[in-house]
Length: 121
Image 1 (cartoon, rainbow, N blue to C red):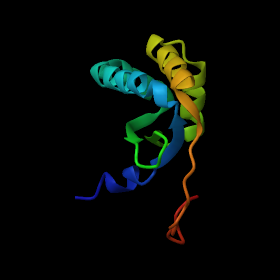
Image 2 (cartoon, helix red, strand yellow):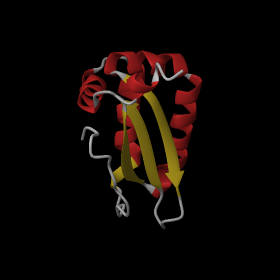
Image 3 (cartoon, rainbow, N blue to C red):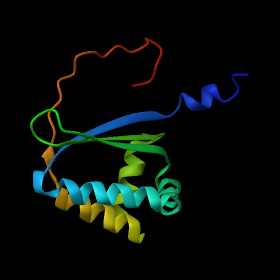
């Protein structure tokens, strides 16, 4: 019944929070919609970097548009390096669009962080 549970625990979710240039929100939203349509290409990127799941959220309530990007992977360093060195057209486009639309790191205040004593960091 729980045979896949131990394997699932090896994956880690990371959040990236970035502000978005207000005049480029529509371009970012169009790109993320295109990624959804090109899911097979995205999955090829996942295979190269060891990623299993990604989600992107746009927050508008903070006064400046903010992108929250969640990535699930076993090794986030490997995933980052694979994206950075990839020659896949979708990865090149992704890096270009994010470089153009994102204004910089977002600000978030950590309010809660508790970890089980036996969990890996």
